[in-house]
Length: 429
Image 1: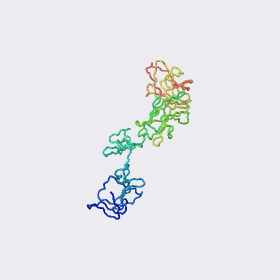
Image 2: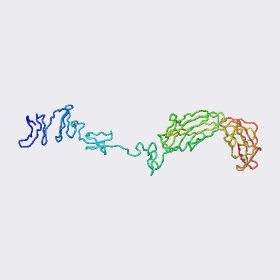
Image 3: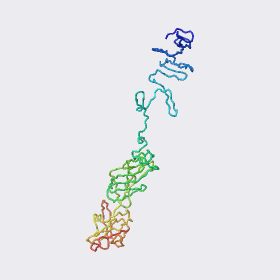
Image 4: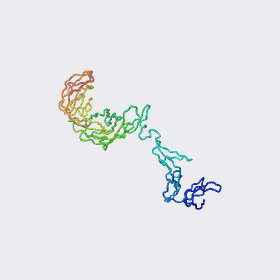
């Protein structure tokens, strides 16, 4: 549209009297201010660069569209809208306000919304889906475990110190130590009282006491994240041993925790514990389990006490051999040291056709003198004077340990010809 130089202000009308525009600031046409009536149609518009700062139009004066000289971008501003770039195609689109449900924060003039990778789906036709995340099942939550122990009817979720787990309403998660079992070559020892130690008496031998141990501790309410063990732990020894002649515990193996079965196990292979060289006193070798749970120390130990046998049986002479003593019908552990308080309850010695004395043999280191009750039944025994056998014998037990033994014999040799085939003998110290 062309226009001659204007000397004043006013309205421009067509020859038919229709208003086209209003000039409200005098100047050259290129720099005058116009207000157009109706639509403006053109193949293109040319907007000259403006200064970087443009005055904000007054209220009811509309808005300004201008090009900044500094960046060449098209901007819009009005008394109600702050200056905003409208020519940046990377940010093109309608603006919107984004806010929380409670109204804070409230961010206006948003032209782009960025979401977490993998959460936005383009459904087409201008529709998108935003996946806000969340677990698909209760067990998928990081602090919930309902797979180790499946929930039962009427159970509730309770926190056990590490996770929320299924439990009966009113349950208390207090650590419970049910039992400790020591499995070795000789026998199995299980103790259900962790407040006391277990003693296993072994026949003394020569060389080493070799045992292969698998220790199993049974727990309730144990949480694996609170269970620590091992010689490098905080005052933990895991599984350790101490021979009778050693001054401290020696670490053997760590314990592995089985969460599903609420137990800990430790396999160590062969453990060699030297036998004492004498039985002048009680000598103990120890297998110990120590670990921490919930900052509390817990330990338990199996103590091996080594002893020798006393023998009760029958024999034809006063000097039985090693094998003959070992084959006596009754053998029982006798105390270490020089005195004995262990008795033998009434025990039946079977007779045969050969006349033989009933005999009792025990280590010569024992100064206590035994007495004997004899009878045809366990309930009907009475005192009988036995004779001390002259001299001693050197006896090697089945474990290879050798001690000097002394003996006692019944007053008369016995056989089964009189109708009594078994005589019961009680030994009292």
